[in-house]
Image 1: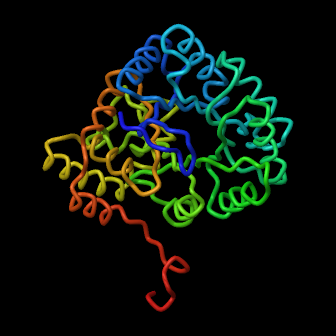
Image 2: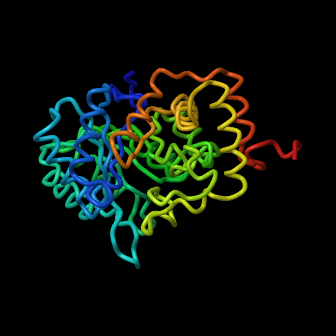
Image 3: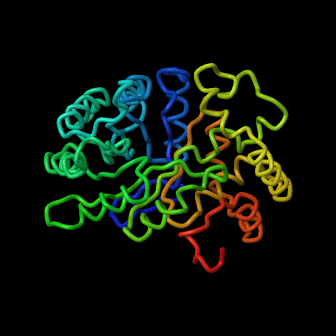
Amino acid sequence: MEQRHLGRTGLRVSRLGLGTLTWGRDTGERDAADQLKAFWEAGGTLVDTADVYSDGGAEYLLGRLIEDLVPREDLVIATKAGSVPDPYRRFDGSRGHLLAALDASLQRLGTDHVDLWQVHAFDPVTPLEETLQALDIAVASGRVRYVGVSNFCGWQLAKAATWQRAATGRTPLASTQMEYSLLQRGIEREVLPAALDLGLGLLPSSPLGRGVLTGKYRHGTPADSRGGSESMAPFVAPYLDQTARRIVDALAIAADGLATTPLQVSLAWVRDRPGVAAPIVGARNAQQLMAALSVEALSLPEEICQALDDVSAPLHRYPDHDWSTL
């Protein structure tokens, strides 16, 4: 698998990442092991997790598999901290919480460092400089190699990245992880231009539109799909509207013309967008993952990319375009 630099850093990652959102909950140890081994054998290196995935179960499971199945040095392990199971405070970016969460993640993962540590979301009640100081401490202590953020809007990302570059001794941000697909192009308004300007690599989450872009929901909801799962159905539901159907239909036509699948076409589209380092792909089993990994050999013709751009284009007006064009 091709390797790419993560933003303007020396860290290289596989251009597809393996997501672990369902590990320890819907994905058991055997399926997780099959996925990790298949990913590693295909040349994949970037494995993304978080301290809240399955209440820590995803990190714990990954740690067990690293010990028994795949050499630690062959992987780029990325995890996140900052989301909390508190109905009154969804995010905690305080220095104390983040550093304690990092220690707990390292223990579950069974490693002395993570390669990429990400703030899971912006915390509006903690001063941003305090949150970012936790990143500097983590790197200085050797527990973290590179740092990034996740789910920051445009001004939040620009402020954080600029703050980190403003003084010697602060660790520049390497990446931002955001949802990005043919069904969700909202980051193109401000987040992606900021990331490109500031040299951050983009790690798209849900690059298959929460599974909808595979085409599996075109004629109903399969019982064994995320949309048919009680826990995940609300996650998929927003992308089962008329707009999504139009995009998925166009995707199916493109896939037929290329003698491939909607999954491959949609994944290739987001993988090769400007600024993208590695889409994070989650799968229920190794068979699903292998279908995604097979996209490595596919490059979309320019006319197909343009047609997909047109059918999925978000409506951006003022101030993104000059007022005189409205």
